[in-house]
Image (tube, rainbow, N blue to C red; front, side):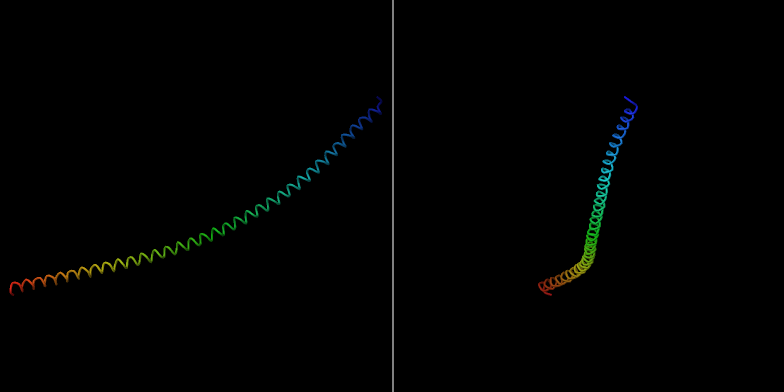
Length: 128
């Protein structure tokens, strides 16, 4: 093999490898472009998902706040009703005590009247 043939063979080998390298590089660039596109699409999808989750959390927080506000209002109403009930109960207990006192006085009066009537009847029987 002559120097010229050897050189030409080496040149063809180098050119083939360079062409193969260029083709591989082209495929790699195309793959990278597809990857970049997928990453961009995924980024958009993640951004939308995060936004939707944020919206759901905001709505949930608003509903929860409204629920707590409603529950607090109902608890306040129950506390007020309990206070009024206790006040009425206290007034009724005071009235009951006064009624018991009046009944006791009435019973004493009835007993005194009964004693007086008994004495009167005994005196009339005994001839007085």
